Image (cartoon, rainbow, N blue to C red; front, side, top):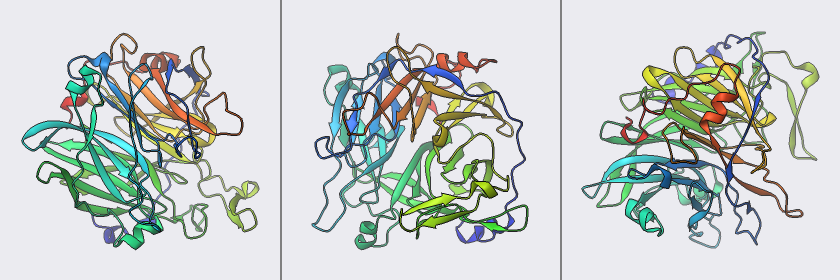
Length: 439
């Protein structure tokens, strides 16, 4: 679907029917965490954000977690949380240009590169408005050497910007989600401070990875409310409600996208096109009037006059999204409710009904998770530490703090610990889906 085809969608959008409230979020504890990184000069301006899990084909217990650190680049971890490799973000190409800034990462298995099936970690480079690709070498993993190698084509163009000057204005690539369709591989990329999504097909360019645009979708940026008024989400001047957290159902080819100040969208991907988006759930703040405080340079919500059109399960920002695949369409869609430090769980099948929420709280081995941006889940066994699957979440407030330095990292939680925490346990299915064979 083209961007122009959705021009009237905002005015016609109907409000999603309310879902009865479920019991409060259940607590779970992570068992492993990665080293804390710091977003200051001493810490290399590293700010953990989004993870992906690469499943080792020979020894799943040797699998990798790959995490973006924004301007700090990319880190690769073992399942024990130890850092195995660090990749720096690209430097600024000129004095007045922005440096590379890695926002989101996802996996593509078995991409045919230079005639060989190659696993790729693909990254949205917000700083330079490119998609970057890194080949993952299983032999290097087995040998204990650096497993990722940059295979980005030298001629890749900006995803959204029409010029390098526009790149430096930073309305650039933001969120990212990858998927396969037969032998073809795609990434969906969102634009910073805009409601735009772009579908790119990856291609082999002489043994390096490039991409081309297949479709563009503009999500609504203003909404018709049931009382006949129009509402636009709270934002700084010049900003529109953006999407970051995204994930694709690898079997059904459905994109789930979290528009931060709006809610969670479902968008079918059919024949290399976006279909019409459906708003599955709204953030609690949806429809609330607001003003902009010039002195404080921030939005102020007028909660006293909240008309009650918001949802019950997500507190802005709606963030990291991931899909747990089960048998015959069963499974879950998870979304980070950043505003209240919880994760909402929706059914993968049917009308994606809300099933409950959980919070990653302080445990014996790790602290809890706050302000989570990114998450990813895998169902397959990953050795003795994670025999029933793994959930990895970004922690935006790693503790204990180092003085005034703000630390972030990633937390690893057993999926069976999450599933078993619910009054009616969630599914644990290690056999029905193999992420290596998806698509």
